[in-house]
Image (cartoon, rainbow, N blue to C red; front, top):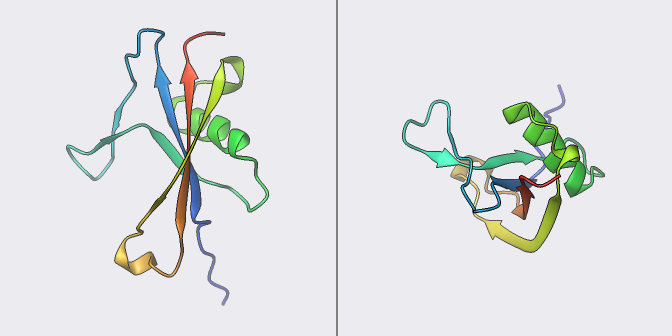
Length: 100
């Protein structure tokens, strides 16, 4: 049996109004842990912009392609939980403004 691993690259999308009110969502199963929209790439060649649009749709129902999606040009590396430490986790940060 082949083991399928999650791709260790993801996007973080900050959805905000023009006056910087930010949408935060409480994680299911992690009471009190709040985050913006995040998610891994669906496949190695998925562009980060496409991943961001897909994740926003999956997690909020919003069509991010209809809004001004800006890449902030910030990339961070984070340590993965112990059970996944054989991979590097990289997250690309961008924002989705309320402007169309």
